[in-house]
Length: 273
View 1 (cartoon, rainbow, N blue to C red):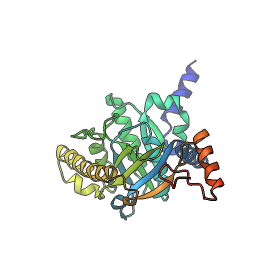
View 2: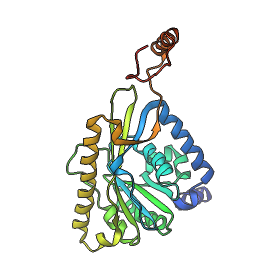
View 3: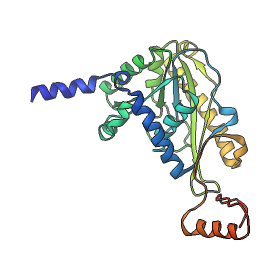
View 4: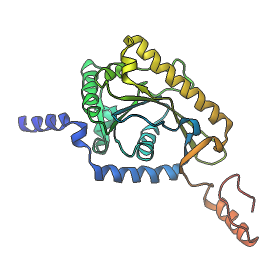
């Protein structure tokens, strides 16, 4: 029994960097890409909100947390927009026990409701950000929240983490989901202007949090305006899902188009057959 307990503790103490598997990560990126296209209409990045060029070094991406889908958005956006970085993210420790495979693609379990959990988060974050080719993605509100909630209410952990990674770049990321014309939802994101850790370290922690919150709020407000426009032209499309409703409805539309010698457009706004 003692040996088993020791082995379990040893497995839990393995660092997220050591646990990450490149082959498993590639497999899961493909899996989430297929899952996304089956259930969502598109992953869009605001044209003004594409990640800016940044100096070499580790990156912290911090965002709001509106949905379960955020984890998938992290995985897909990291793969397409930060391919040169190994990406990591903290998740609830209980969830990691249920979905252990996430530990093999860069996720690490934390319990931010305890002092021990907060210390573990800082330790793992420091290790991850010690190499220039790594990125740490954080749902910095630490809970699900409505995209319209103000103030956004960031937890203090990110302000402490920056002290352990003075050479990193920090990027705010706004995430919003909306239904437009298609069956699936639009997943819309935008990155704010990058900040260097040193400029934040010159501020007291309370002011540091305020700066991080104000940058994220501005990013969310700008993104919301684009989402409300319902104009795909304001976005770059990273991933396109499957348009149309499917089933009998689309079968009839396809047949009608064929009988009239027209190409079938499955989108809801496509030309009528």
